[in-house]
Image (cartoon, rainbow, N blue to C red):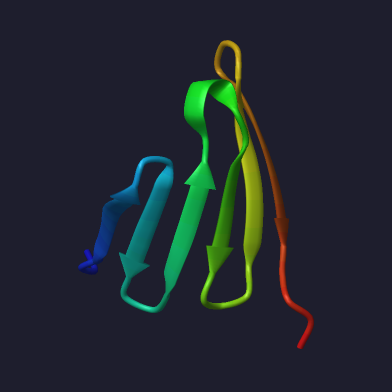
Length: 65
């Protein structure tokens, strides 16, 4: 089983810095069922939202090469 590294730090209320072995990202929002916006150092941008019940929504875009 490979070893993984992932760490998340709360910088300010509603702002998180996420670090893993290959990249880092900043996540904002997500309070009280609002959308979360994540911007990664690899160019990926994700918008996600928790919906009532066991549902969720996610849209991911990547930077063009």
